[in-house]
Length: 201
Length: 195
Image (cartoon, rainbow over all chains, first blue to last red; front, side):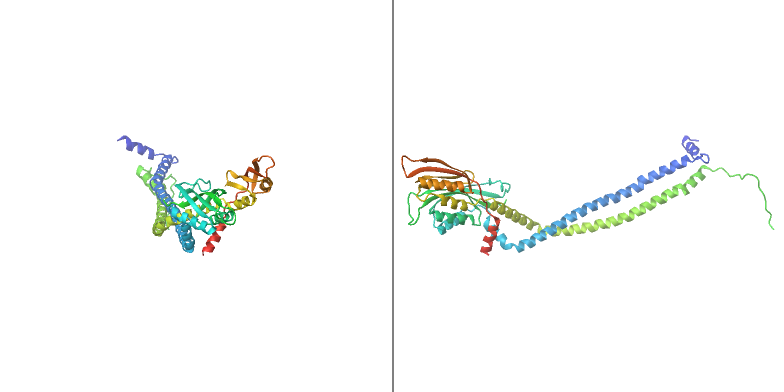
């Protein structure tokens, strides 16, 4: 008789009351069933559930985005006039002609005569509050005008309330050598200015 | 009437064979294990069906939402640009200093009888005034700068005149103590005027 079956026979022939062999085999089968049937079934459920959770998270993000975009679209429609003004106030691209023309007109309205306007190259702004805005570029320049103190005051006020952001960095004025106006003294005013424009990438 | 018999002998049971034991085990413990496993697998299968249905529904919802978001994709960049531009405009406006108040105050302090007056106003280096004026007027100007809340450390750096002169060359400097910036409300006023 071969050794294998004989050994099995011996194991199964355990006397009554000593059922360790049966217990062990049952446990073995139970463990085998666990690893071959229950565990894969459980994993298949948990894995799919995990995937579903990820899908739900993504769906929530999409829903949030959709709601935000719808809200933005509604706001764009509601504030269309303001947006159009913003595009005028902070023009896209450098436009020296626009700035010079407006300054000249403000100077004329204030009773000042513009003598020279010079503008430098475009560069990133240096003010700490806006240094992080990479789309905003600045142009530094100077304006030399001739007018009375009262006219100068008016010109400054006009520039400061002008919606295109023109910043007066410093002012220097001295009595003009050639006095032209009849009432009051004429001054040569030198303003260092910076104007800003939007640079869409 | 039937007869009742006695058998005082211990019943002799045939010793179980290997196959009998295997059979007993298979219809006993093994059957319970298999049934339990089958129950678990059937339950798992049912749950899996539910989860798969949920997954399919989610896929459909995602597909629908993605197509909606895709329609807005071109607008999204525009919205972002407007937001950044608005923010840049506001930040820039609010960080821009206002000069007209300082200018008006300095101009009002200038000596009326002054000649060759030169004024420099710069937020970082302060105010510098030089020229020629009657001594008394220079004193008044100095006092005005010193008494003003807008300026600090007003100093008459130099005053030059010979003998009992009325006019003297002077230079005065002061720091700007209060530098006001533009307010965004101004823009609202400008916009309301434009509208």
